[in-house]
Image (cartoon, rainbow, N blue to C red; front, side, top):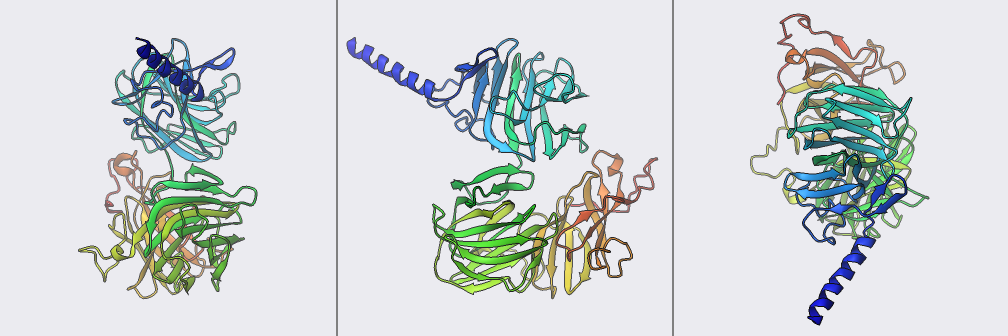
Length: 536
C-alpha cells in the first residue's frame, strides 16, 4: 500500500513540475495570464506541451504554439479543436512571426454562436492584432483590429454559413494592403489599406463556443532541402518565400538536413536593397565549414563570388549582372567532383567556373551575410539523376519540374532566344544562345490581380515604339497575354501587357494600361473565344 502511495505521489510531483514549466496559460482579463489552460487531448500533459508539434491530426507549418485564454484545446480526428468557456476567448498563438504573407486555414463551424478567427501580425497575447473572423450568427466574415473601438479597422462581408460545414479563410498581407479571400473566388471580398500592425505572430482564436481548424499554413519556402538543423540570425516566412536578416553584422544561416556530393543546387534570391546572400553547399552540419555561392547587390548590379563559410574568398565573377527593382535572381550551382560552376539568371558562360578540393560533400543551406534577402524554390538534384530519367527528352527543351504546355512568346533579342510556355496559367521561361542548350529562369508572368496568364506572344521593341523603355536604353521586350479571370463568364478573356527592361529577367505588368484589348463580348453572351487556348 505504501509503495502504491509513493508511486502515485511521485507521478503527481512530476506532473506538477511539467505543468508549471510548460508556459501554457489561460488568461484572466483582470489579472493577466495566470491560470493554465485545460487540455482535453486524452494524452499526458508531457505529450501536450507543444500543442501542434505533437498533434498528429493537424496539418500546419507554424511552430511554437501556446494556448491563451479560457477554455480547452484538443487534437481531434478532424484537426485542432478550440473550445472557449462561455462568453470567453481562447487562442492558440504560434511563435511564427511574419510581415508580408498569405495565411490560410480551413474552419469547421461547431457552434453557430461561436466566432472563429485567424490572428495575424499579433503580439504574444493576441490582444493587439488583426483578426480575420467568421461569425456564423451574424452571417459575415469580418476583418478587424482586435483592440476594437472607434476608428479601428472593422470591415465585414455577408456570407451564408451553416453548422458543421467547412469554410476556407485566407488573407494576404503586403505592407499596408490587406486582402481577404472567400471560398473559390479569385477576387478578394475585402480589399483595404491599414497600417495599425506591420509584423507579428500568427495564430487562431475562438470566442464563446467551439470551432475546428485544419490546414493552417502560411506562405513559405518551396523546395526539397529537408529539415532545418541549424538556425542563426532572423528567419521568417514571407510572400516571397523565406526571409533572412543579418543581425549586428553577424550572418543569418540555415543549414538543412539534405546532403549531397555531386549535384545541381538551384534557387532564387531577391533583394529589396543592397545586401549579400548565398546558397551554402557541402557544409558541415553546424555551418562552420563548406562553400557559399554568394550574390552581392550594389545598386542595380549584382556580383557573384565563391567563398568558404569562414569568409575565405576562392574566386569572384569577372562581370556584374543587372539587378533591377523586383529582380529575383536565379542561381544554379553545379558541383561535380572538384569542379564548381555557378550560373546566374541563365547567362552563359557561368559566372564562376573553378576547381577546388576543399570540401567533397555535406549539407545545403541558406545564408544572409548583410542586410536581408528572400529565398524561394530551392531544390537539389543529384548529378546522376539530373535530366537522366527514362523518357526524359535530351534534344528538345523540357522543364525540370512543373508543366510544359502551350508555347508562348517565342522571341529573339540581344543574342538570346526566349522560350515561354504555359505552366498552370503562368508563363514559364527559358533562354538559349543556340536553341540547343537552354537555361531555365523563374516564372516570368505569374498570376496577377486581373487573373491567370494564358497564351500570348512577345515582341522585341528595339526602337522604343511603346515608350516603355525611355529610361532603360531605348529597347526591351513586351509580352501580350490572355488575361483569364476565374470569376468572370468564361474567364472574361482580355489582352494584357507586361514588359521587361533587363533582357527578359524581370517582368512588370503595365500599371497605366494593364489591359490593352477588352473582351469583345464582355457585355453579351460572346465569351471572346478564340483569343486564347486553355493552358494545361
